[in-house]
Image (cartoon, rainbow, N blue to C red):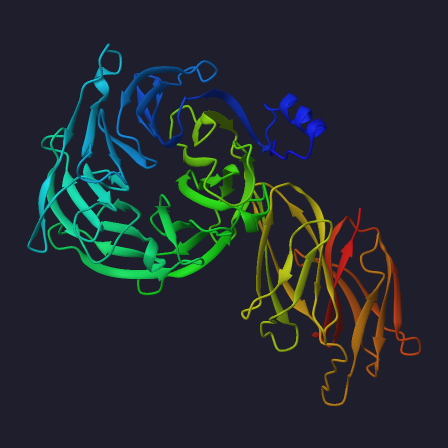
Length: 538
């Protein structure tokens, strides 16, 4: 429920429904509140038990969420007051950094031994690496974010080291004392991720993400970059197959955006999406992660969004849960969303409302694609209007005649394809979860005629269309006594063939056809001179 205080009566209603939340296919399993504001959340699992690792404005908390209905805080490690904390894990250690404090009060990199999670006192140490970058010595004290890759390399972003790029440390030899390997120091990174020898950095102030070869940690090499829609790249994550990355721009009305990075010489934007929980022009996306081809994203004032990204060029929202009582612009509400617990439960940190433990079945979306071409020239038609009736799917074919769309719910729909100068076409499409329905659409130019040795000059129209079985085919300017009308299904089976009456120029049909899409053809001598699509309704 969103907080709108319009008067005493409204206030009473609001107070009586404070547990109500805007949600779709996400349900609350549990919640834990703190006496101070919360920031980041990460997850940890050990021996079948699950834990939330929580960044707080005044420290670090470990909350057991094995039973999400009754979360229990096991430890609270006090720390300097700051809005920004970040935590990641490697083996049985948690690594914590903070921002905005400065050298005098710094906690460095706090390293917590999670094997002591059941002890009365949590074991931890703090390190302040002394490193050399571009012949300058630095003593670490602050960082905005960090990441640990699958090889145990700790990446620190937005630190006081150098320009605040990506500083790399090895955790393998001594996890409690990271050893410095090198840095990519070209520009400030707000956040980043790495896999194998590839680093993706969120260069927030440059308005882009960058791709860096870190096979040699001592001498990283810039590979590529790409701007983001709102020029304020806040965070970045990658798909499991490494072919796609996703970014958030921390700006009002900004997008979560997908990019094809399979060819770093030709990075291309695939699609972009915003939340539907509240006016998308007034909401700020914060962090996104990828879990089983889904985007799990936290939004300030709008909570959690789940997007089916199995078709990264067709991003479809399929679930959400609003954690915040606030609306609109600003940095209140959800900060982080962690979707990687073995149970499938999702941890969401809301700055004011605390820790949420949420559950979802991650519903798949339904997808529709089309290719529109001229039935005579076979060339793509750009700008064709495509509308799925009684659905939100609508738009135009692109320069290549392609159209892509999707929706959350299943159903049987009529799709109308129109373009000025062409006869319209109507398709029957069954939308099913996790399925891409594709149709090739050939539009016939209005007034089209063909001269074949002076034998035939004609065009056809079919009406009514759609129909339940009875329809007429009208032929104009027919001169060929051998011209026939044929009815074919989409599997290539011919159902009927009827000669055209030269006097009437029309053929009437009353057929017992099952519902579906059929093709009406005007033929003569084995040649097809015109076609129209026919939709049979149930």
